[in-house]
Length: 145
Image 1 (cartoon, one colour):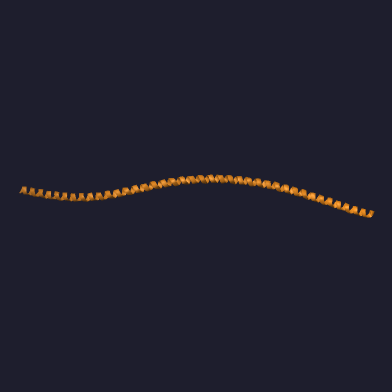
Image 2 (tube, helix red, strand yellow):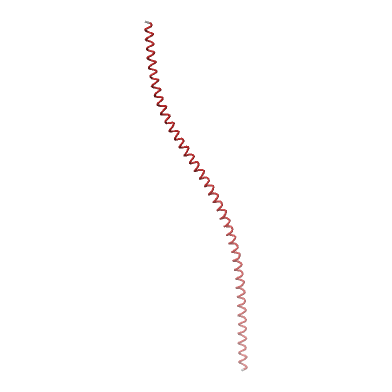
């Protein structure tokens, strides 16, 4: 009987082992399916990471390009500012010189006009004198005749 009990125990144990093996096999299959699913998700994430990395590189390149353009435009603006500033100074000096020349010319014109007015006044005085002499001469000629 003891043998039968041992045998029964061994058969039960073998059934349990078989059941456990079957459960382990099912679990292994399920884990393998989950692994395949996770592996697919990992591949998808890896592709997305590569895509994002490429986009980042592209954006970084665009940023570098924009940064260079910004520096270039800054240099041009600075150069134009300097050129315009120099032109402004030159124009201001030119205007100042023209104002001085204008003032000198006005002064010369005023002096010339003053001289002409004096000459006209002297000429009128001479004409008045000549007219007075002529009138006086006519009277004397008239008296003599």
